[in-house]
Image (cartoon, rainbow, N blue to C red; front, side):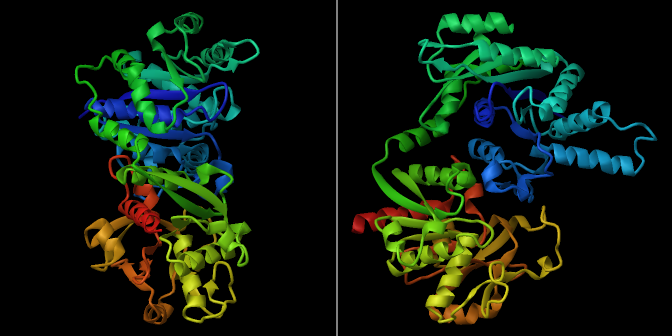
Length: 538
């Protein structure tokens, strides 16, 4: 059985420095050297999971194969490594405290006073070691959310300190990501924030082994020497992370900086096999040397924050590279689309994607966008609520069912073409109670979906409560919208298409969650191909 070694990634100075991308890039390099690697994220907020968080608060909620609602960084992990994650890869303070309190109620602490140390830290350490104890992995990378010094991060840093002591220093590496800002007035990079951040980590009993320094400008040898001397690390362990055009360049940048070699040396693991990154480099070449361009309108209601649609954005990047095409995505706020301005908002796009979401806000704008795409024969892709909007629009404007709607938005609609699943009608709790995770789907041969996948049975991930109402199936199919994907166990509709249209596909699941660099999602690839053909036909 493999004995896993552990890499911890912390962040200092400020949030949003890119711990997840650095963790995923290091994992990619180690994987390319032949090591089996996984990444886990520990989030310091008290929500049990991000499932009930507004996307404006924390970006998109990522869903794993086993139905866990997780942090969006798990999407980066999967896109880089092409390996699925699970519930065990994302832990929150809420989940930790929930477990400890349940244990206390069962009397498992034998009358002891339950405290942050040792009870909370022991539970954190147990979860940190779970994946390593499966025997599947050589290296576990653990990203600690938040910023060192935040009060909510303290139990995680203390748990990390204890675990380093438990495991031994040759089995652990601490990577600390900091900011080296450039002051234009002084004309120089400043190392003081990094020094203070490391000092704060040292006060908590943790000495970082590697410093990854985010900077706008290259670090000189003198600055690296200064950081190394003041922060008590080797000079070759001061790693530059400068801004790049795309996150997919970061693994190659970390390779150039020898981050993987520094980590493997500290862990006393072999660096004999050079990383095999040919496929990655080929992807980057196609991404950076497109032969064409398409303009896609992403119609949604969280468009002010790009992270709200992070996986969709990345799926477009993968599909663009597969088609050797630059995909320019323009966010269009669905609340601002009306019947009178829809042409002004959406004219000139080569494809229209109507995004997922919850609630009634902006729903009519999405319906207008669907109608515009259908009537103007523009390639259309609807995801989750986007698919439901396509059904609502078709029922209203083609089938003549005036007032057709989803019972989520309009409980008194005379034609609930989208309705609550029977199993959901008694549910009162919001968190973790939707149809979540991977489900089977049978495709109709000859359909656009079948052509994309090239097979008749697929599995895709879900996150929703409401479904296509089967009572309207015959009427809608007779009018020209076909159900081309069905769940074989329940008979629920998963995919709708309009065969007479150039390319019109709506899916109840979330295909963007399975798109990776190595395996671009086939529906996104075909959507971009259809958009390219539509542009060329103009």
